[in-house]
Image (cartoon, rainbow, N blue to C red; front, side, top):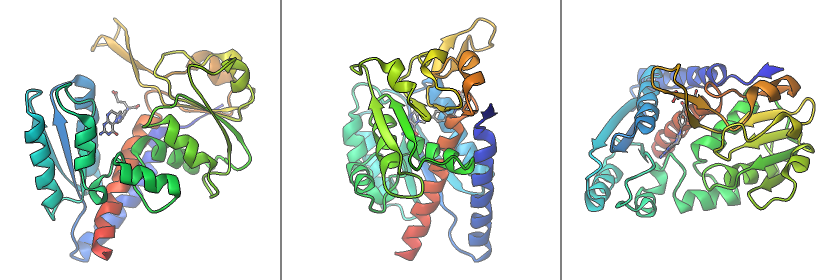
Length: 293
Ligand SMILES: Nc1nc(=O)c2c([nH]1)NC[C@@H]1CN(c3ccc(C(=O)N[C@@H](CCC(=O)O)C(=O)O)cc3)C=[N+]21
């Protein structure tokens, strides 16, 4: 069993970006600049956004963190997005979700200009992604592709079972893995709560992608010998031994599943870190595409 280490794979991507940014700098060109908006003080969101900002800094990318109290009005937030859309110094914009209930995530998503939508959440980007036109692929599915690529895991002709049909993970990764290109050509089965006999469907899988949001959902009896297991879950489970009182757990019963796998991604230290690398890739692309017109 080999671990798919997000730390190792994301470090390689970040090193490459760092060199490219250094080259821009020495050519006196503009350095990519990400604007991240965080509303409220949800501890998980704070961790993720701080990590995004820190990672920008590590590779020489500029970032601006815009913070608001959870009482900010929807109109104020939309105004800020308009301002960042117009700001020529800003290449990428992301608004961390979830947002407070009085703010429409849909309105916010639609307001960000598709050219600056480095999260790839705008319907224009989602549509372009589906049609295989140039687009921003959202961070989690893109991160999974980068992880598979880094470890040289072949997808062509493989049976992939994706568990979970969310807009942000299950649906886009199913589309991306089934398309006709170097990171696709898989036979994809997208499973969900109405799937009949999920364990036997999973046992057919060469690659399982677990994105359900339930700890220990994928158990050893569901996994074929030598399968590749990608765990996208990020569940905060009560754990009195941790300083925070919580432990981060994936969707896979790691202890019992790992011995059967050829490769498995851990949580933490797996796909989560790849999502950040993917965001940096998208922000770099947003900046350089603009330069090229
Ligand atoms: N507009 C928007 N874009 C997002 O991309 C977005 C979002 N909102 N909302 C929430 C989800 C979740 N997400 C993660 C990012 C990093 C880790 C990550 O770095 N995880 C570390 C551990 C972090 C920890 O210790 O809590 C790991 O798995 O090793 C996880 C999850 C981005 N998301």
